[in-house]
Length: 309
Image (spheres, rainbow, N blue to C red):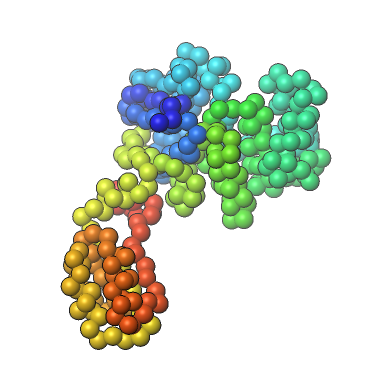
């Protein structure tokens, strides 16, 4: 098993009588993309600030790559790249000049800084916009430049806080693909904080559902689905190429099938276990043929709504 690179132990943050984060326990493994999911105001950003050592916890502790964020925040910042929701640049400088400046702030020599900046602009797809003033960049271009800025210091971990807010759908798709590549090809650990369920489901290996400062569920999406919907019947929809009067009865006889009904020209088969393969085989052997088959799949939307109900 890969080592843990972020460990939160009993992490708590209070502002007076208000508890923003409440005894949070969480581990994130090296190289994975972890989605911190929850509505605005759930405590996600406060958690990120404590991970970065930008605010101190009221109780508990944070360790990043074995380093305590509260007592050694500078050491943590050397290992972590952070992309906030709204990235700031010097608008009168070009994308290349902004990157070179950030590189030199990170003690990278000028010649190396230039080479690295050019390489990173190409990596994020901004090579043709390198000499353009960032004040004229679109929202999506600024976020991609922000990602290049994060990568300047070759971090072990990237933290993204609502990074796709305000980006058009095409830009979001490109940005998400880039994040996935960084994780898979370069082994970078990514903490992705968002309230956009579809985006989280697209790229995250594991997710944590966060509400009112509490982590109410955590794990792989299919694990959460099995846990939440284990008492529900699995529904398989089947459409055949030809009518076969006895087929409904044949489906009903299968072990693991609870009920069969015919709706909208399709068989709706409720199962107590996954017998999809047997259902398909039965349809083909009956001579009716198989035109369409769909098994119920519970996604993050279903999981999220079930927890909050």
